[in-house]
Structures are given as C-alpha cells and as structure tokens.
Length: 144
Image (cartoon, rainbow, N blue to C red; front, side, top):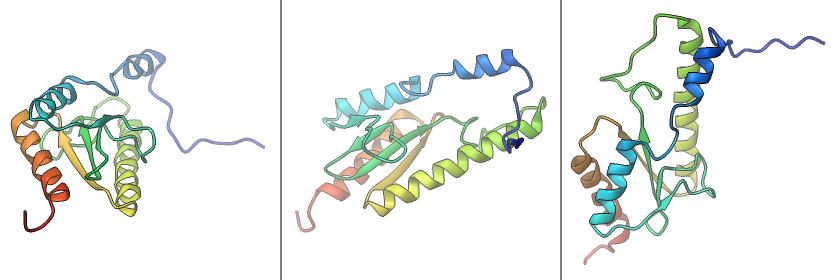
C-alpha cells in the first residue's frame, strides 16, 4: 500500500533545515514578557508540560495560559505574510499552525483555563498589563 501524505513537502532541504532552526521557545518577545511579569511579582511556569499545547507561560493558581505568538507563524492579522516561493506548502503549513492553536485553546478552555495570545509585535508593557489584569480577575475574590 502506497501512502500519500496530505502534507506538502518543503521546497528544498536547505529551507527545511533553516526553518527547523527557528527558536520555538524563549524568543526575545517571550523573554521580555517573562521579565516584566516577574518584575511585577507574578510567578508562573514556563512551557508547562502537563497542559495541552504547553503554554509559554502558565499561571496555575489562576488557570491563565499565555502564548507568545510569532506574527509569521501564527498569521498575525497586522503583520502576517505569505511567502511567494512554494506558496501551497506554506499555506498548508500556516493553516495547520492556526488550527492547532484553536485546538489548544479549546482543550485548555475545557479544563477551565483562560487563554491569552500575545503577538510578538505587542509592546511588552501593554501585554503584561493584559496578563496581569486577567490574573487579578481570576485570583482576586469578588468583594475584595
């Protein structure tokens, strides 16, 4: 039986190798957000292995999961681009990334987690404000 893959092959081996070297965690935007949240006194788990999708940051007590998404890889509506070369392969690849993101969000929501996505282009302070506000909302009891 011959199996055909529904996943297109990359244009060439060099492109595949170059893309595989892209950092997947501890990127500059992620590190900046982690430093700012830590400076504010918030403590979190990094790439928590026990959660669907291994969020970049997990506030376990508040059940807040944070993903720091790259504009290219996750199709930022402001900065996402589509390469000209091997367009069909990239279309399928980026479609899978976005579908996987939505599946992770749904799996976390089913477990009672709130999911926040921070784009790599977002200002660190503004992103930290959003995360901190959600953390406070989830941790602080009503009436306090």
